[in-house]
Image 1: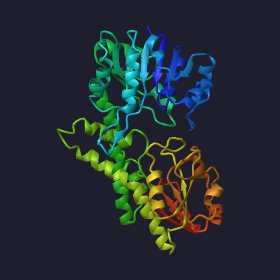
Image 2: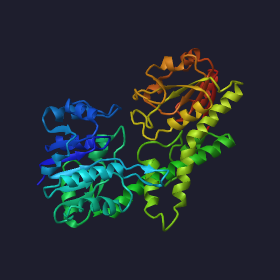
Image 3: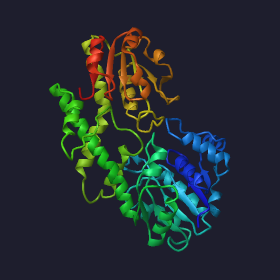
Image 4: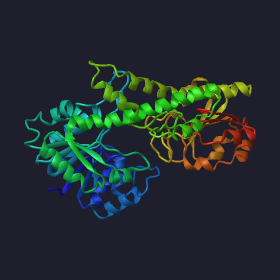
Length: 431
Protein backbone atom coordinates (compact mmCIF):
# COMPACT_ATOMS: atom_id res chain seq x y z
CA UNK A 1 0.00 0.00 0.00
CA UNK A 2 2.73 2.45 0.97
CA UNK A 3 5.04 3.91 -1.63
CA UNK A 4 5.40 7.64 -1.00
CA UNK A 5 5.85 8.98 2.52
CA UNK A 6 5.87 12.65 3.52
CA UNK A 7 7.58 13.61 6.78
CA UNK A 8 6.53 17.01 8.11
CA UNK A 9 9.19 18.65 10.30
CA UNK A 10 12.84 17.79 9.70
CA UNK A 11 14.33 17.97 13.16
CA UNK A 12 15.67 15.46 15.69
CA UNK A 13 12.70 13.17 14.99
CA UNK A 14 11.87 13.87 11.35
CA UNK A 15 15.35 13.56 9.88
CA UNK A 16 16.22 10.08 11.21
CA UNK A 17 12.67 8.80 10.59
CA UNK A 18 12.74 10.05 7.00
CA UNK A 19 16.19 8.52 6.45
CA UNK A 20 15.07 5.16 7.88
CA UNK A 21 12.00 4.94 5.64
CA UNK A 22 14.03 6.05 2.61
CA UNK A 23 16.60 3.36 3.38
CA UNK A 24 13.76 0.82 3.57
CA UNK A 25 12.95 1.62 -0.06
CA UNK A 26 10.14 4.17 0.20
CA UNK A 27 10.08 7.45 -1.72
CA UNK A 28 10.34 10.00 1.07
CA UNK A 29 9.83 13.76 0.98
CA UNK A 30 10.71 15.87 4.00
CA UNK A 31 8.62 19.02 4.35
CA UNK A 32 10.42 21.72 6.32
CA UNK A 33 9.70 25.47 6.57
CA UNK A 34 13.31 26.41 7.37
CA UNK A 35 15.10 26.95 4.06
CA UNK A 36 18.67 26.20 5.16
CA UNK A 37 17.59 22.77 6.43
CA UNK A 38 15.93 22.04 3.08
CA UNK A 39 19.10 23.07 1.25
CA UNK A 40 21.38 21.02 3.49
CA UNK A 41 19.27 17.87 3.23
CA UNK A 42 19.06 18.11 -0.57
CA UNK A 43 22.87 18.29 -0.61
CA UNK A 44 23.08 15.19 1.57
CA UNK A 45 24.32 17.25 4.51
CA UNK A 46 22.88 16.51 7.94
CA UNK A 47 21.53 19.51 9.91
CA UNK A 48 22.05 17.59 13.17
CA UNK A 49 25.67 18.16 14.13
CA UNK A 50 26.00 16.16 17.35
CA UNK A 51 27.56 12.71 17.61
CA UNK A 52 24.85 10.62 15.90
CA UNK A 53 26.25 7.19 14.91
CA UNK A 54 25.38 6.36 11.31
CA UNK A 55 23.01 9.26 10.64
CA UNK A 56 25.24 11.46 8.47
CA UNK A 57 26.27 8.49 6.35
CA UNK A 58 22.69 7.21 6.00
CA UNK A 59 21.31 10.61 5.06
CA UNK A 60 23.96 11.10 2.40
CA UNK A 61 23.25 7.63 1.02
CA UNK A 62 19.46 7.97 0.67
CA UNK A 63 19.70 11.46 -0.84
CA UNK A 64 22.29 10.26 -3.35
CA UNK A 65 20.06 7.28 -4.23
CA UNK A 66 17.12 9.63 -4.88
CA UNK A 67 14.99 8.12 -2.11
CA UNK A 68 14.90 11.26 0.06
CA UNK A 69 14.50 14.91 -0.79
CA UNK A 70 13.32 17.99 1.08
CA UNK A 71 11.01 20.87 0.23
CA UNK A 72 8.97 23.67 1.79
CA UNK A 73 5.92 22.73 -0.33
CA UNK A 74 3.03 20.99 1.45
CA UNK A 75 1.52 20.10 -1.94
CA UNK A 76 3.71 16.99 -1.73
CA UNK A 77 1.07 15.65 0.67
CA UNK A 78 -1.50 15.36 -2.13
CA UNK A 79 -0.23 12.05 -3.50
CA UNK A 80 1.32 10.72 -0.29
CA UNK A 81 0.32 7.31 1.00
CA UNK A 82 1.45 8.20 4.51
CA UNK A 83 2.10 11.56 6.18
CA UNK A 84 4.13 11.65 9.40
CA UNK A 85 3.94 14.81 11.52
CA UNK A 86 7.10 15.40 13.56
CA UNK A 87 6.67 18.93 14.93
CA UNK A 88 7.39 20.12 18.46
CA UNK A 89 4.70 20.80 21.05
CA UNK A 90 6.32 22.84 23.83
CA UNK A 91 4.53 23.99 26.96
CA UNK A 92 3.77 27.70 27.43
CA UNK A 93 4.70 28.36 31.04
CA UNK A 94 3.10 31.82 31.10
CA UNK A 95 -0.24 30.65 29.74
CA UNK A 96 0.06 27.27 31.48
CA UNK A 97 -1.03 25.34 28.40
CA UNK A 98 0.52 23.44 25.47
CA UNK A 99 1.79 25.58 22.62
CA UNK A 100 0.04 24.00 19.65
CA UNK A 101 1.14 26.61 17.12
CA UNK A 102 3.61 24.39 15.23
CA UNK A 103 1.34 21.34 15.38
CA UNK A 104 -1.76 23.25 14.27
CA UNK A 105 0.14 24.92 11.42
CA UNK A 106 1.41 21.57 10.17
CA UNK A 107 -1.96 19.81 10.49
CA UNK A 108 -3.76 22.70 8.78
CA UNK A 109 -1.33 22.55 5.86
CA UNK A 110 -1.79 18.79 5.62
CA UNK A 111 -5.59 19.17 5.72
CA UNK A 112 -5.49 21.68 2.85
CA UNK A 113 -3.57 19.18 0.71
CA UNK A 114 -5.29 15.95 1.68
CA UNK A 115 -6.50 14.33 -1.53
CA UNK A 116 -5.72 10.62 -1.12
CA UNK A 117 -7.01 8.20 1.48
CA UNK A 118 -3.74 8.63 3.32
CA UNK A 119 -2.56 7.39 6.67
CA UNK A 120 -1.68 10.37 8.88
CA UNK A 121 0.55 9.66 11.86
CA UNK A 122 1.55 12.08 14.61
CA UNK A 123 4.99 11.17 15.98
CA UNK A 124 5.20 14.20 18.26
CA UNK A 125 4.77 13.92 22.02
CA UNK A 126 1.42 15.56 22.79
CA UNK A 127 -0.88 16.08 25.74
CA UNK A 128 -3.58 13.43 26.21
CA UNK A 129 -6.70 14.17 24.10
CA UNK A 130 -4.71 16.21 21.54
CA UNK A 131 -5.37 13.66 18.79
CA UNK A 132 -9.11 13.94 19.31
CA UNK A 133 -9.49 17.63 20.20
CA UNK A 134 -6.83 19.21 17.97
CA UNK A 135 -5.50 16.92 15.22
CA UNK A 136 -8.69 15.09 14.24
CA UNK A 137 -10.76 18.26 14.61
CA UNK A 138 -8.57 20.20 12.15
CA UNK A 139 -8.33 17.35 9.64
CA UNK A 140 -12.10 16.96 9.57
CA UNK A 141 -12.99 20.64 9.26
CA UNK A 142 -13.12 20.47 5.43
CA UNK A 143 -15.73 17.74 5.48
CA UNK A 144 -13.52 14.66 5.42
CA UNK A 145 -14.02 12.00 8.05
CA UNK A 146 -11.30 10.13 9.92
CA UNK A 147 -11.56 6.40 9.35
CA UNK A 148 -13.48 6.94 6.11
CA UNK A 149 -11.64 9.52 3.98
CA UNK A 150 -8.26 9.14 5.71
CA UNK A 151 -6.73 7.06 8.48
CA UNK A 152 -5.33 8.58 11.66
CA UNK A 153 -2.82 7.29 14.19
CA UNK A 154 -0.14 8.39 16.63
CA UNK A 155 3.12 6.55 17.14
CA UNK A 156 5.01 8.55 19.78
CA UNK A 157 8.75 8.73 19.13
CA UNK A 158 11.24 7.37 21.63
CA UNK A 159 14.38 8.97 20.24
CA UNK A 160 17.10 10.79 22.12
CA UNK A 161 20.14 12.67 20.84
CA UNK A 162 23.13 10.39 20.45
CA UNK A 163 20.91 7.36 19.82
CA UNK A 164 18.50 8.54 17.13
CA UNK A 165 18.87 5.68 14.67
CA UNK A 166 19.45 3.07 17.36
CA UNK A 167 16.23 3.94 19.19
CA UNK A 168 14.10 4.09 16.04
CA UNK A 169 15.32 0.70 14.91
CA UNK A 170 15.46 -1.21 18.18
CA UNK A 171 13.02 0.13 20.76
CA UNK A 172 9.46 -1.13 21.12
CA UNK A 173 6.78 1.36 20.05
CA UNK A 174 3.20 2.05 21.06
CA UNK A 175 0.90 2.65 18.06
CA UNK A 176 -2.36 4.45 18.72
CA UNK A 177 -5.16 4.59 16.18
CA UNK A 178 -8.64 6.11 16.02
CA UNK A 179 -9.95 2.74 14.81
CA UNK A 180 -8.71 -0.77 14.17
CA UNK A 181 -7.89 -0.12 10.50
CA UNK A 182 -5.76 2.91 11.40
CA UNK A 183 -3.91 0.84 14.00
CA UNK A 184 -3.29 -1.97 11.52
CA UNK A 185 -2.00 0.36 8.80
CA UNK A 186 0.32 2.18 11.20
CA UNK A 187 1.71 -1.10 12.55
CA UNK A 188 2.25 -2.33 8.99
CA UNK A 189 4.06 0.90 8.06
CA UNK A 190 6.38 1.01 11.07
CA UNK A 191 7.19 -2.69 10.81
CA UNK A 192 9.44 -1.76 7.87
CA UNK A 193 11.86 0.19 10.10
CA UNK A 194 11.25 -1.01 13.69
CA UNK A 195 12.83 -4.25 14.87
CA UNK A 196 11.24 -3.96 18.29
CA UNK A 197 7.66 -4.90 19.10
CA UNK A 198 4.77 -2.69 17.99
CA UNK A 199 1.88 -2.49 20.43
CA UNK A 200 -1.44 -1.34 18.91
CA UNK A 201 -3.85 0.62 21.13
CA UNK A 202 -6.14 3.64 21.00
CA UNK A 203 -4.84 7.19 20.53
CA UNK A 204 -5.54 8.36 24.08
CA UNK A 205 -3.68 5.44 25.65
CA UNK A 206 -0.69 6.09 23.38
CA UNK A 207 -0.67 9.77 24.37
CA UNK A 208 -0.76 8.89 28.08
CA UNK A 209 1.96 6.24 27.72
CA UNK A 210 4.41 8.68 26.13
CA UNK A 211 3.87 11.57 28.54
CA UNK A 212 3.92 9.16 31.50
CA UNK A 213 7.22 7.51 30.56
CA UNK A 214 8.92 10.90 30.41
CA UNK A 215 7.18 12.14 33.57
CA UNK A 216 8.43 8.97 35.30
CA UNK A 217 12.02 9.78 34.39
CA UNK A 218 11.63 13.41 35.44
CA UNK A 219 10.35 12.30 38.85
CA UNK A 220 13.21 9.83 39.23
CA UNK A 221 15.77 12.53 38.43
CA UNK A 222 14.02 14.90 40.85
CA UNK A 223 14.39 12.27 43.57
CA UNK A 224 18.10 11.82 42.76
CA UNK A 225 18.61 15.60 42.85
CA UNK A 226 16.92 15.90 46.25
CA UNK A 227 19.09 13.13 47.68
CA UNK A 228 22.13 14.93 46.22
CA UNK A 229 21.18 18.12 48.06
CA UNK A 230 20.77 16.15 51.30
CA UNK A 231 24.17 14.50 50.82
CA UNK A 232 25.82 17.88 50.25
CA UNK A 233 24.52 19.12 53.60
CA UNK A 234 25.58 15.93 55.38
CA UNK A 235 29.04 15.86 53.79
CA UNK A 236 28.60 12.59 51.92
CA UNK A 237 29.23 11.73 48.26
CA UNK A 238 25.80 11.08 46.72
CA UNK A 239 27.34 9.08 43.88
CA UNK A 240 28.72 6.57 46.38
CA UNK A 241 25.31 6.50 48.06
CA UNK A 242 23.67 5.90 44.67
CA UNK A 243 26.08 3.08 43.87
CA UNK A 244 25.30 1.29 47.13
CA UNK A 245 21.54 1.95 46.95
CA UNK A 246 21.48 0.31 43.53
CA UNK A 247 23.05 -2.83 44.97
CA UNK A 248 19.64 -3.49 46.49
CA UNK A 249 17.27 -5.42 44.18
CA UNK A 250 14.52 -3.40 42.49
CA UNK A 251 16.31 -0.07 43.07
CA UNK A 252 17.42 2.12 40.18
CA UNK A 253 18.37 5.52 41.57
CA UNK A 254 19.04 7.95 38.71
CA UNK A 255 21.92 10.41 38.36
CA UNK A 256 21.65 13.90 39.84
CA UNK A 257 23.05 16.86 37.95
CA UNK A 258 23.11 20.50 36.96
CA UNK A 259 19.58 20.37 35.56
CA UNK A 260 17.20 18.61 33.21
CA UNK A 261 17.12 19.81 29.62
CA UNK A 262 15.94 18.68 26.22
CA UNK A 263 12.60 19.02 24.52
CA UNK A 264 10.75 16.22 26.32
CA UNK A 265 11.40 15.91 30.04
CA UNK A 266 10.95 19.58 31.05
CA UNK A 267 7.47 19.72 29.51
CA UNK A 268 5.95 16.23 29.35
CA UNK A 269 4.94 16.19 33.02
CA UNK A 270 3.20 19.50 32.33
CA UNK A 271 1.45 18.10 29.26
CA UNK A 272 0.23 15.12 31.27
CA UNK A 273 -0.96 17.30 34.15
CA UNK A 274 -2.67 19.71 31.75
CA UNK A 275 -4.98 16.96 30.52
CA UNK A 276 -6.60 16.77 33.98
CA UNK A 277 -6.12 20.40 35.05
CA UNK A 278 -9.75 20.81 36.14
CA UNK A 279 -9.98 17.44 37.88
CA UNK A 280 -6.90 16.75 40.04
CA UNK A 281 -3.61 18.34 41.07
CA UNK A 282 -0.71 15.95 40.27
CA UNK A 283 1.52 17.11 43.13
CA UNK A 284 4.37 14.62 42.77
CA UNK A 285 4.94 15.52 39.12
CA UNK A 286 4.99 19.23 39.88
CA UNK A 287 7.27 18.86 42.92
CA UNK A 288 9.82 16.89 40.91
CA UNK A 289 9.61 19.50 38.15
CA UNK A 290 10.27 22.29 40.67
CA UNK A 291 13.29 20.45 42.12
CA UNK A 292 14.80 19.90 38.68
CA UNK A 293 14.19 23.52 37.72
CA UNK A 294 16.14 24.72 40.77
CA UNK A 295 19.32 22.74 40.00
CA UNK A 296 20.88 25.33 37.66
CA UNK A 297 20.31 27.96 40.36
CA UNK A 298 21.94 25.63 42.88
CA UNK A 299 24.96 25.50 40.56
CA UNK A 300 25.18 29.28 40.85
CA UNK A 301 25.06 29.00 44.66
CA UNK A 302 27.97 26.57 44.52
CA UNK A 303 29.90 29.05 42.38
CA UNK A 304 29.24 31.78 44.94
CA UNK A 305 30.47 29.49 47.74
CA UNK A 306 33.77 29.01 45.91
CA UNK A 307 34.21 32.72 45.35
CA UNK A 308 33.53 33.38 49.00
CA UNK A 309 36.10 30.76 50.00
CA UNK A 310 38.75 32.29 47.73
CA UNK A 311 37.75 35.82 48.78
CA UNK A 312 37.07 36.73 45.15
CA UNK A 313 34.38 39.02 43.79
CA UNK A 314 31.98 37.46 41.29
CA UNK A 315 31.48 40.86 39.70
CA UNK A 316 33.75 41.32 36.64
CA UNK A 317 35.15 37.80 37.08
CA UNK A 318 35.60 35.49 34.11
CA UNK A 319 33.46 32.37 34.28
CA UNK A 320 34.00 29.53 31.80
CA UNK A 321 30.85 27.50 31.07
CA UNK A 322 31.73 24.09 29.65
CA UNK A 323 28.77 22.63 27.80
CA UNK A 324 25.86 24.50 26.25
CA UNK A 325 24.03 21.43 24.87
CA UNK A 326 21.72 19.79 27.39
CA UNK A 327 23.11 16.30 26.68
CA UNK A 328 26.62 14.92 26.35
CA UNK A 329 27.99 14.69 22.79
CA UNK A 330 24.94 16.42 21.30
CA UNK A 331 24.36 19.82 19.70
CA UNK A 332 20.82 20.04 21.15
CA UNK A 333 20.42 23.17 23.30
CA UNK A 334 16.65 22.95 23.88
CA UNK A 335 15.84 23.85 27.51
CA UNK A 336 19.50 23.48 28.41
CA UNK A 337 20.29 24.12 32.11
CA UNK A 338 23.27 26.18 30.95
CA UNK A 339 20.99 29.09 30.03
CA UNK A 340 19.64 29.89 33.54
CA UNK A 341 23.17 29.53 34.91
CA UNK A 342 24.50 31.98 32.33
CA UNK A 343 21.65 34.42 32.90
CA UNK A 344 22.13 34.40 36.68
CA UNK A 345 25.89 34.93 36.36
CA UNK A 346 25.31 37.88 34.04
CA UNK A 347 22.91 39.36 36.59
CA UNK A 348 25.88 39.27 38.97
CA UNK A 349 27.94 41.11 36.30
CA UNK A 350 30.27 38.19 35.61
CA UNK A 351 31.97 37.88 32.23
CA UNK A 352 30.74 34.57 30.84
CA UNK A 353 32.61 32.63 28.15
CA UNK A 354 31.11 29.41 26.76
CA UNK A 355 32.78 26.36 25.30
CA UNK A 356 30.94 23.47 23.68
CA UNK A 357 32.29 20.58 21.62
CA UNK A 358 29.31 20.57 19.25
CA UNK A 359 27.39 23.86 19.54
CA UNK A 360 29.06 26.53 17.42
CA UNK A 361 26.62 29.43 17.65
CA UNK A 362 24.98 31.12 20.61
CA UNK A 363 23.11 34.39 20.15
CA UNK A 364 23.14 35.38 23.80
CA UNK A 365 26.83 35.13 24.64
CA UNK A 366 30.48 34.64 23.80
CA UNK A 367 31.17 31.09 22.58
CA UNK A 368 34.53 29.64 21.56
CA UNK A 369 35.69 26.29 20.22
CA UNK A 370 39.04 26.57 22.02
CA UNK A 371 39.33 25.13 25.53
CA UNK A 372 42.50 27.12 26.14
CA UNK A 373 40.82 30.38 25.09
CA UNK A 374 37.83 29.65 27.30
CA UNK A 375 40.06 29.04 30.35
CA UNK A 376 42.77 31.65 29.85
CA UNK A 377 42.51 34.07 32.74
CA UNK A 378 39.36 32.34 34.01
CA UNK A 379 38.26 32.44 37.63
CA UNK A 380 36.01 29.39 37.48
CA UNK A 381 35.33 26.38 35.28
CA UNK A 382 31.64 25.42 35.44
CA UNK A 383 30.99 21.96 34.00
CA UNK A 384 27.38 21.72 32.78
CA UNK A 385 27.58 19.04 30.07
CA UNK A 386 29.77 15.95 30.17
CA UNK A 387 31.02 15.93 26.58
CA UNK A 388 33.68 13.25 26.04
CA UNK A 389 36.24 15.93 25.17
CA UNK A 390 36.06 17.25 28.73
CA UNK A 391 37.03 13.89 30.19
CA UNK A 392 40.50 14.43 28.72
CA UNK A 393 41.10 17.75 30.49
CA UNK A 394 44.49 17.90 32.20
CA UNK A 395 44.15 19.57 35.61
CA UNK A 396 47.77 20.68 35.80
CA UNK A 397 47.53 22.36 32.39
CA UNK A 398 44.28 24.21 32.98
CA UNK A 399 45.42 25.44 36.40
CA UNK A 400 48.26 27.28 34.67
CA UNK A 401 45.78 28.86 32.25
CA UNK A 402 43.32 29.97 34.91
CA UNK A 403 43.59 33.05 37.09
CA UNK A 404 41.69 31.42 39.95
CA UNK A 405 41.63 27.61 40.27
CA UNK A 406 37.94 26.91 40.87
CA UNK A 407 35.91 24.03 39.44
CA UNK A 408 32.15 23.64 39.89
CA UNK A 409 31.15 20.24 38.57
CA UNK A 410 27.54 19.65 37.57
CA UNK A 411 28.00 16.16 36.10
CA UNK A 412 30.43 14.31 38.39
CA UNK A 413 33.07 14.46 35.67
CA UNK A 414 36.00 15.40 37.91
CA UNK A 415 37.35 13.68 41.01
CA UNK A 416 36.99 15.95 44.03
CA UNK A 417 40.11 14.44 45.56
CA UNK A 418 42.24 14.92 42.44
CA UNK A 419 41.04 18.50 41.95
CA UNK A 420 41.84 19.45 45.55
CA UNK A 421 45.21 17.67 45.32
CA UNK A 422 46.08 19.91 42.35
CA UNK A 423 45.12 23.00 44.33
CA UNK A 424 41.61 23.63 42.99
CA UNK A 425 38.70 24.83 45.07
CA UNK A 426 36.05 22.28 44.11
CA UNK A 427 32.30 22.00 44.43
CA UNK A 428 30.08 19.40 42.80
CA UNK A 429 26.42 18.47 42.76
CA UNK A 430 25.91 15.93 45.53
CA UNK A 431 29.48 16.14 46.84
